[in-house]
Image: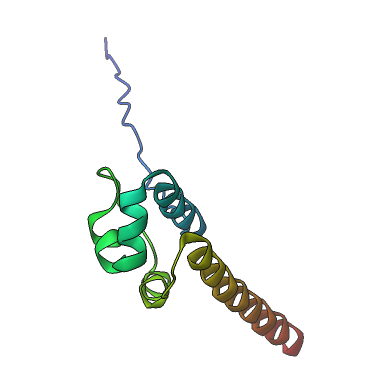
Length: 104
């Protein structure tokens, strides 16, 4: 008699968080921890490099560069500047897409 075996191999998929999710995590960490907030405002490069409580923030290079380039005195100002630039860039990308879609 021939026996058959079923081999079950788990499949793992990498979940890549969106920049929106990562920025939300980053700002949440800054809200709950005064020391991390100060580091983020004073030296965002180090804040991103070191992460928070062993957690890292996986941001696209352009979002990371934007965050490092912002100079803000407080968390509200940082969030406002981030939001302003990201909303503008999202709008520009959508406008460019809709123009190219109409041309084709």
